Amino acid sequence: FSNLLEDAWLSARALKDYGENLFNPTIRLGVTGLSRAGKTVFITALVHGLCRGGRFPIFESMSTGRIATARLAPQPDDAVPRFAYENFLATLIEQRQWPSSTVDISELRLVIDYQRKNGSEQTLTLDIVDYPGEWLLDLPLLTKTYERWAAESLALSRQDPRARVAREWHAHLATLDPKGRENEQETLKAARLFTAYLRACRDEQFAMSLLPPGRFLMPGNLAGSPALTFAPLDVPADGTAPDGSLWAMMRRRFEAYKDAVVRPFFRDHFARLDRQIVLADALSAFNAGPEALQDLEAALTGILECFRVGRSTLLSSVFRPRIDRILFAATKADHLHHSSHDRLEAILRKLVEQAMQRAEYAGAKVDVVAMAAVRATREAQVQRGRDRLPSIVGTPIAGEIAEGEVFDGETEVATFPGDLPTNLQGLFRGEDTFRGLAAGSHQEADFRFLRFRPPRLVSHDPEGPALPHIRLDRALQFLIGDRLQ
Ligand code: GDP
Image (tube, rainbow, N blue to C red):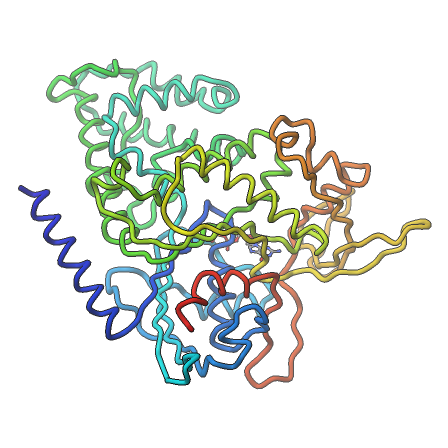
């Protein structure tokens, strides 16, 4: 019965959204990606570019002057935090520091007044919804029992290299009797050690994508709540938990996690998105080696599963996604010389195609782009012996170290990004690494992966400076260009 009620409620909401959209055309744009992919920077740059008028030659409605104004407006959802755009922008431009990253869902509304191609005046509302990609990877949990999830998580944690960082948690697990009485303190301890294990996996860059529950690493506003206080126990996958046992308690909380956390997120937020951009720090994955790359592909597959439409998808039991365009973007392309941007895009395209095959993906229109929402570097030719090498110049963040030098946050350096490999299979097998291809030495590779400060901007424009970017306009054209015709 409750399912019927939920269905009716969902249909009513879809109808209401549809009705509002008729009178007030709206796009709900989802921005996601795993932690540190560049979501916060992307949204800040996008909103600034739209409101101030960025240099966007490929974003047709803006470059031809059809966009009259874009302004912020109060967001529609009272229960969702507002994306702190003004603070983030000030941090970026005035302090030349990167803003703090996404840890929870947030939202921002933009209203764009433009002239249609037929000359009439029109308004488009753009609702931007920022949420951690980790949350998407929770979707498969909806079809799993506690026992199955526990068995799978344990099996994974007993394989190297994960087993190394799971020792402390495994030692505690061995002291627990699943059929013994429920015990809050032991449960808290198990959840803490399990979370530390997940975090260690993430920090050491392995199996990021195989680490649900996503909220354990990205708790949002739920940190410390019982729905997040559980952990796998060593129990048979087909067993039954005795009443009042530790096992029964873990199981109850796992179910609460699904009901109170996972399902509402998909129903209330994800289901209402029209367009989606998925950001990925592909360069870091190439640099970290084949496991990280496989992991990135697994994450992309997992993410695509969420967007798949059709009868037998996981989601059709929860709702039907209405997203009709998805853009996969490799971020931080300003770490490469422009001659490599097409290559980065080609590698991402191959990764996404493989993931689409694995997910048997069908549905929305998909595209890829290599971009930098905020370009922190500029290009130069640097003389090296008899060669002139294409290089990038930027200010490393204070405290970054390369070749024994500690940077002060003010000094500029020129680095040689080297060529990206073209052979994706070689990258996957670890034969061809990005690092290995750097002009001869690991030290230069280290240089290339220095984190740079945001750019120094000078402008006499009363509206302040525009932010430099790479291909942000292409992303915009794909994501909303067709709705500004
Ligand atoms: P989030 O966790 O997805 O919100 O990631 P952020 O947007 O906070 O980005 C994480 C970090 O990546 C930032 O602190 C920057 O160091 C870096 N970053 C993000 N976008 C760019 C970019 O366009 N260019 C450069 N050079 N660095 C970026």
